[in-house]
Image (cartoon, rainbow, N blue to C red; front, side, top):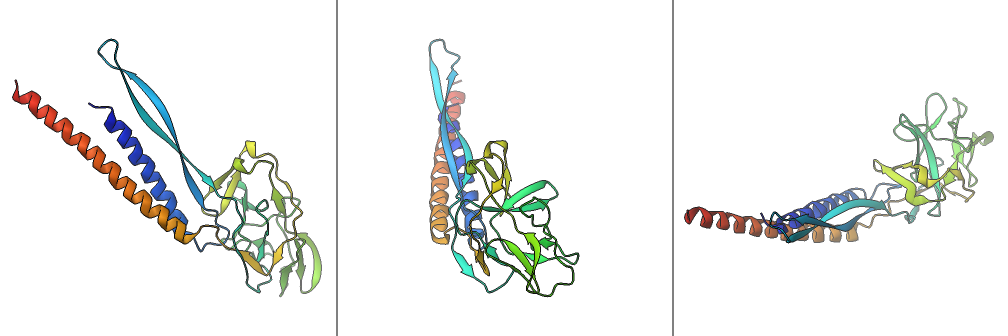
Length: 247
């Protein structure tokens, strides 16, 4: 069998991955705190020794990864006291999850019935001491100030929303749509003293138009590679038919 079909097949796998990434970016273009991803491809030259002595065949195998875009998204003012945004592209809020500490740019928070500051899905927001932010359970008006301090009914609570950064942002791995897990190469989470934008949310940094363009281009390239695979397949069938006919 021709090695060219394997090269074409690896290209199809790569374009399929690019389609998935672009579609996910389009789907989350309006998700607050979402970080767009880019599909990264690397070509690896693989040498295969033929059965005939002294001849070599080569093909390219494509390895794929994705990398998040950490550029800050547009900040939109909501007028809601528990909405808060990080204005630069280095900081993250810390969240307690069943799988451990995770980090996010999404700053739309709530107060649970037991007085904890939580995300919309109930995960506790962590303070600068890496502990859940605890508030008075009977508070009727809760707000976050630019320095991260939390007030309840106009009074200081002593609680403060933690904002952290890392020496190596490329060591952060996406987990779901808006969470990041810090791999060891990211370094230790350290306090980040940037003033917060209050009564505001950071929007997704995925551009719907450019993501749609990427989606269309990847779809066309996938179709083109699929035709190459089909051409190789037809060639192999014709060769097999000719061989059988000569017997």
